Length: 220
Image (cartoon, rainbow, N blue to C red):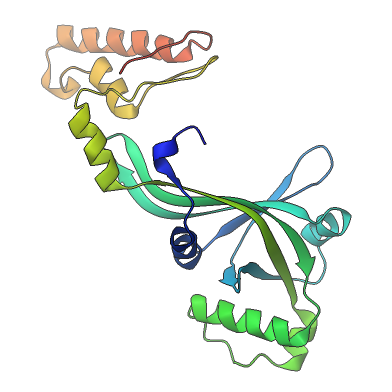
């Protein structure tokens, strides 16, 4: 992971995100392109469980290749002042299988119902167990990442003039706050026509800068 200061690899962090996250994005091998789908899920005994129909494209993909990738996150919110997003996230790999054991299916569906506070009847009837598919992900790797408010505040105190310029070899990125600060030094609605024209020129100039794909920009 490039941003080592945001890396999280302890079990408590993984458990927290699995508990608070309501959606997991599961990616399957599907020929030329991956196939990804967002699902409700629950973590139980070190594995991930999600319910599904007993037929469909994701089960076709699973039958061809059970190796999957998944992501889950606990969205916190957009920090407009810092031009960033606060989050906790997990990415991982695993081997998927379709659960056949009725007792394990019952436990998984019960855990799902309790996580999402569903008003379904428990225990699940044998008839419902028969028509419901349960995918189990046996986790093979996990990585975690977070961008918490307290940590970003520390970075701003160390370097309060940081402009959130981020570089790549073929792209230039600029935060929204930096973009509008450069483009509009004052509120357009409060300026004279001449100042408004200057702001429009600044916007055009900045937009051209953002379209420059082969330049490298750095600002600390």
